Image (cartoon, rainbow, N blue to C red; front, side, top):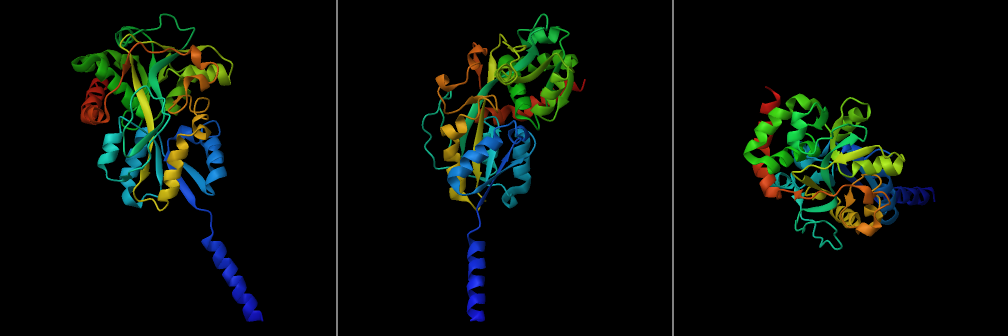
Length: 328
């Protein structure tokens, strides 16, 4: 009898071990993970339906995500990478580390068409320089900014997707004159930070007049803080667009769960969290579903965007131009 009971107990323990809750690990950028970011609400919403343990892991800023995944290779513990953008997707695809998602996205509200077998969008926005409304003589172009005494904080394009977006913004707007523009901006730059969070924090601490961020950033202050004192400066050249994406790693041991997460990413349960936590435009939510306050944001007269292939082709040269101008 004791042997029977013991055997039954061992069977129960073994069954419990095999029935462990599956874990889905998602690498993302640091600002996605904190309590004030989208991570916690999205984790709770997805876990209600997946029967899994969703774990977000902060891995620096957006561009640092690709560096980490490339370094870890097939040994990576991540199942999904969330937070690359279209300026990096061609380089990410070339690693061979990402698997096709097999999802036909429906209900996308991006301002551009979307076709990518490896990556799906979750939000988008326009880069902009954010300032306090008390700032006198707000520059309305890169040339005006370079000619002014206005101080700015920007992000490193080698580790930060906004930093890379700024380089491509200048390159798209000025082409062969990009080096001249950067030479003019060099004395406006207070510092270059590894990521967006550090740069925006310095701006809020009064260390600079303007910070590279997004046209949607003032919505945070207006909606979350009831503070209308921040604004994004409209630039005559137009504004460069960012589309943020997620992809499944080919080495995942949870391929179906990873695919389920990407499908969930385009549902209201995920998308409705984005506007007031990531402070971006959701990729699959109509404009009328945006919270009150978003209607006050500037809309660029011209949207600038390189294709993923074009961005990959000019990235290294744009970084070299930027680094050369700032080192003089």
